[in-house]
Image (cartoon, rainbow, N blue to C red; front, side, top):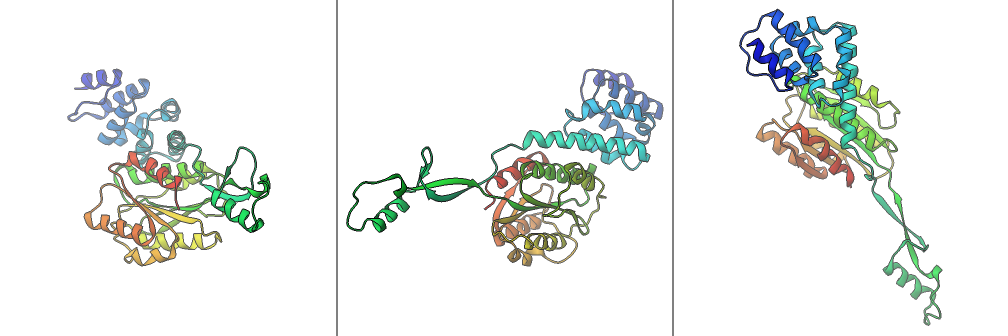
Amino acid sequence: MEDLAEAAIAAGDTLPKLDKLDLASIERLTESAIEHENLPALMSLAKINKYAVSNTLNPERLVSLGRMAGSGGVYTPRLFFVMRGVLDVKRRKILKRLTRSSILKLSLRVASEGLRGDLPVRGEYEYQTDFDLEETMEQVLERYPAGIPVLQRKDIVGIERRERQKNGVLILDASGSMMGERNINAALSAAVMAYSMRQDKFGVIAFNTKAFLIKGIKDHIPTNEIMDRILDLEAVGYTNIEDALKMGAIQLKGIKSRFKWAILLTDGAYNKGEDPRYLCKQYEKLHVINLPGGKKWGERVCKDLARLGGGRYVTVRNYNEVPRALMKIMRSPW
């Protein structure tokens, strides 16, 4: 059995279904998985016996995982959430840094330029710009009631497109889940938001039993620190959407612009706090991304929150679809 696992690791494949392996065998296979840079195999071994893997993951071997962190998808973050409870402070710190690096690289692949909405501003026409025909006709009729002698450039109403500043709050469900999937999703979504809105005002809230302010909408916090705050959250089974929406409304209240919105990521199955639907009226726009794995009644809650909040409702089949769903909403949040 160990020979089959060794061959799979060397070939870069996932591990076959393994029967009982002793401690020494798992430690040897862990060394092999690191040597061959096979993160899926390493993750499988950690699920079998995280203590055996912990015995092998000395700081030097952890540092060598850095080469895999960027190309390993979500395996490094998953490994962090499985192993963080059995690693000492030094090794946990190293693995968290690698996890953060992996998430930031993933978010860079998703985030792109050109998300900022154009705000048309009318003024004097300039060459190579758009012009407003209807406004131009009205202006010409006002200026020349007796007839148009010669149409001049100043008579044409031009349209200058200016970037509209975004003001948004991301509200992330980080309640209990296997292998920290929701924490990983929350950290990745926050990183995408941070890259896409680096010139705008944005806040980040995560919640489980209660809401946690990760980044205030007017705060200036490095993306690395935002990641660390989310990664340090303990995954618990309770889901308090009410507390999160209250905190989000408070954050947006401090922004005077009417172009402000929130995006809520959850499965809607709250089991702490009151029914959150009454809070929708406190939002200009409340968009909802329905996370997978929830219950039918939670889906109804998500749809109602989006409808009552005047926002968009998007459902995803798996967590890999979340970042792009987030980007889709952020392209046109109004």
